[in-house]
Image 1 (cartoon, rainbow, N blue to C red):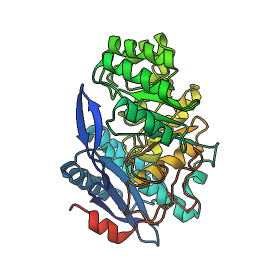
Image 2: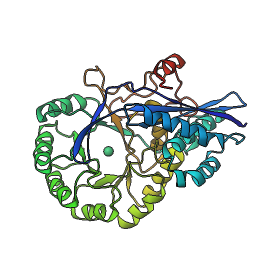
Image 3: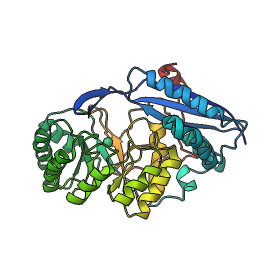
Amino acid sequence: MEITRCEAIPLASAVEGVEMTLGGGDREVGVQPVLVRVHTDGEHVGVGETLTYDASGAEGEAVARMAEALGSDLVGRDPRDPTAAWEAMYVDVKRSNAWKAMSALDEALWDIAGKAAGEPLYRLLGGEAGAVGAYATFPRRQSTDDLVASGAWLAETFESMKITVGADPAADRERVAAVAEGLPEGFGLSIDANTSYTVSEALRVGRTGERVGLEWFEEPIPHTDVEGQAELNRRLDVPIAAYQSHAPHYPAVDHLRANALEVYQPSAYLCGGVTGTRRVATLADAFGKRLVPHAFGPLVNYAATLHVASASPACDLIEFAVYDDSVDDPGEYVASPYVAGDPVRVVDGRVSPPDEPGVGVSLDSREVERLRLD
Ligand SMILES: [Mg+2]
């Protein structure tokens, strides 16, 4: 089997903008998918995906064109050898930083490998290593009272929830304490500062986190400050989490040697796809750390991430974004109407990868055409 063509399609976001605190200020960001289809001379077409936050669509367009350029070098290769393709792409991407394009292509190759074998991807990765729970990311800016009310609603479906912090450490300490104290008994809480604090600010917020028993403190400071994260991890009882902003698996070595993180959160859409994420999972496992993948955004990439999560003994939990608080079931995946059927859903706090061959997600071509931006 040979790859004949790689096609990339930027799509409009299917959900409203998401509010994040970045760089000390609030910003609304988009959830813009970029789909990749890898065509072959056989019966199988592979599907992979990445995402951008640029609501204008310009970044999505640029990433799509980069994916097609990078993919043109894969023509003639056997798509059932994604590791060799990854190494070949890495020669270029370590200089061009086209990680999102590479990640989507890698996912599409694994999709073909699974389809050709007639097995869901997690079986090719070694099979199910254990159940995977889901925690809710709730990217809406709400008052403390409304967050507590949302938590009570989310607790019917999820194990725990995550809220964003990072604007004002004093106000964040009050809010974190109030939300933690208002949530149902046994329902976990974690916080995400999206790299916004200094070390001393993070220590102060982390002390509140210790008192209320936070599950983890995510990206407290700039993700490039390995020593700073190691200091926080040493001085705080709250586990420090990060890695969603890194690519590929090599920076994990520095974090592991420094004991900087307890929780590793690779983003499959950035970290080098299934191959890169799986390598982070293996490294984290070898050091006795927890894998809780960053899995924010559209469903093809989510499903690919879920296969890696399911096959990793270091993973017992994955993110699940609840974009809309007006839906009946917060465990329903609403971000990707261009995916046919309902292949992923959180039930009783657990989420499983699709059981169809490959990544296990089929596209609704009419919806893809309706949402495409190019
Ligand atoms: Mg995060």
